[in-house]
Length: 303
Image (tube, rainbow, N blue to C red; front, side):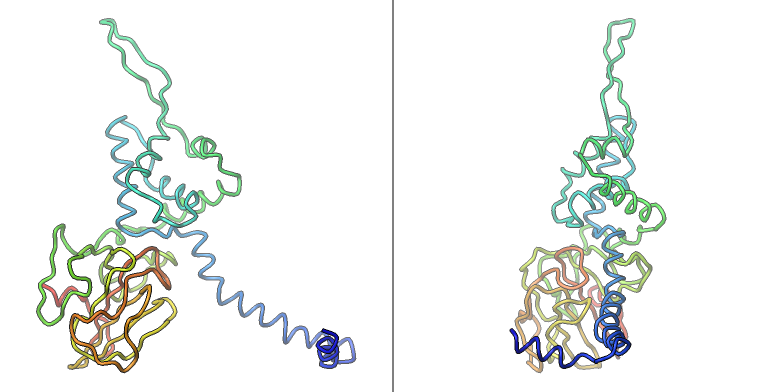
């Protein structure tokens, strides 16, 4: 320990000005660089609900169901904002039942009225968001976070998150390509411009998201050669496969990878397993098809 201390002291400049410059160069600057790199994702995590289309529909349906039953009810945006804080952005803890139970908390029975014929009818009151947050024992800091999420939801059109691009009951027709997760056809987000569920801005969604349980095998859509297999920023664990005719497929957010770079694969071979790595809001496969490097709608190959 003494030797290490002497080495560090030996590296320090002698005069005060040089020591300041040394600290600025080797301590302050790296810290600022790291802060800039991570500022975007951290801010997004704090202000944008990390919810997928299926989960979002639970809250919309819950709010509508309560309004039908009691002729009043909360805004679905309030429900999403509350659970973004309550579940600490882990919407895998959500369910249709929990969304409905939360929506019911906004309704309070305040008594009843009796008609001249002796009929009894309950009287309900719609509670405010603050009243429900108090019932949930939210701290002031948690209440502020709920309101930040709510502000984002009120000022952002996230309807595109609900548009999967396929009708209910859709089944892919396998022609040139094989479906990468056989038997699972739950498209949670389609190809094209959408509100990015993590950053809250409109971006091109370069593939389709297929909702599937973590650990589901992912299969190669066509014969080809593995161009890359590993970690790639927002993709998380990903496999890129080159095929003939200048075609490429990509399989992202995997929990683990079952192939290696330069490996030759056949259509239907297991190349990895569904996960939620990288920039992801829950277990799913992000599947891309590219021609000449340009992303095209994968569903066009399955019509």
